[in-house]
Length: 179
Image (cartoon, rainbow, N blue to C red):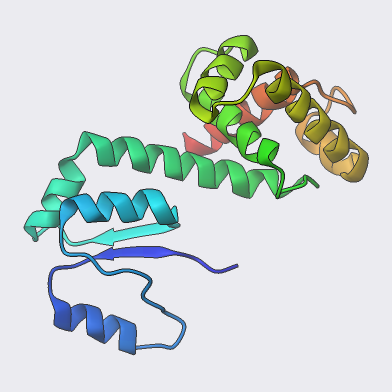
């Protein structure tokens, strides 16, 4: 799996040194201002963000509420995505990303599936019935193709969890890992 990294540095010679140090690193975009770094972060969804707090751009980034919000979302979505790879989902389905968003919402807000669906509907501009149907179909297919042993390891009290149970359980497990 290719890992994406955002390296924020105002010293061009250092960036060239890093880029020339190995063929495994490829520059996608370079930037030297705060707003562009935020745009790059939103666009590329990196696995890592590396910056130097001695530099003014980096200080702005580390103190930014917008950056903290973006990072919180990116970190939790990456954790959720990594965890969900233990199951056999159709990872290319648009509803897979909606499921990740639902689990992320369940991590940070009091949980009611209806409220979470409503929030995702507004965020993704999708019809509520279609969202509910898509997540149900995604879970049914996952249950069919995931070995029962794997399902029982994470949700031991049922072999076919409902969307509510699945989202709650996965959010709970991930929350425990974060603490």
